[in-house]
Length: 410
Image 1 (cartoon, helix red, strand yellow):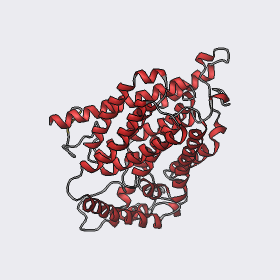
Image 2 (tube, one colour; image 1 turned 90 degrees about the vertical axis):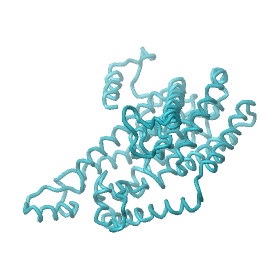
Image 3 (tube, one colour; image 1 turned 45 degrees about the horizontal axis):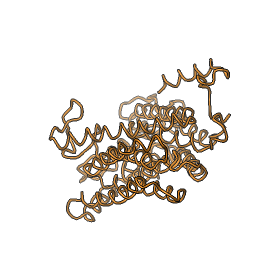
Image 4 (cartoon, one colour; image 1 turned 30 degrees about the vertical axis):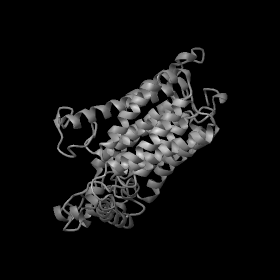
């Protein structure tokens, strides 16, 4: 992404107004997303400051003082971050996701490009779901050239964890459903193809056995359908069929793939997570302003793990709580608010644009999936999922302004 951004920046610098077809300089001026951009930048800046040994020693994580005492090194350099290596890794990821969003925002002003990107999302996620289905049903149980070491018998695509796959596939399902419902001559000819992708993605979701994932996807689908219902009065027959199929299939799959008492299993899962959430809240209370550094949750929570806890959970299984542990409350809220404002921009665009379903509505539905599943899992901490989310959000924001305002929003 850094390389692509540099190429785009160079092309933008040398581009000319005369050559509009090749012109790549910013189509959307930074001030159009000024506040979210500032909030995201502030969170990134704080994540970097957490790594700097030059911050006041009183702000450093207490573990550094303990390490200095044990090692007998009074001048042991420390930082706010407990795990600077993980912090640098997390900073690079956040920067990469931001670049994906910005490039999607610029190129997404072209309706042709934006819908082509959505078709690619639908096609590739379905291909990955098909790969997962073949793997699981054939008994191959492999991820590429590696033999699966966990979650055997479940569809996970190229992921290890079915929860992460379910979020990824949910984004693709939203894309495929939007293409099924789109009232466009070219899309109508391809509608059987999009319906086939929809079926593959639904099957993959069902056999992932990720109840939280399917519930989050169901909420996203309902958001998309609600937007279509509010904005469109007459639907094509096949479009109606796609809506009914998706609306009925998701809840049915959610129920049919249950094993045993779903209520009991859900309560058990929430019980395990409850212990982790309690530890996260305690860590937040210890360092509410400074945080422990990106990627530090596993190490920071080690001292709080009950002796009887067999599983070592490296993540909080709640993105919001873990961000507050890592970045501190102010910086975490800054990062989350930046995304919330972009989703609000998508909501405004979904209500204003004439095309139904528009890409702003697609991004909004994907946002519902991401936000809901982040309450119980950490899919957005997986780079592939977060990158796809950044792409969809960028396309949605880019298309949230009317075409009547022109392609260039300088």
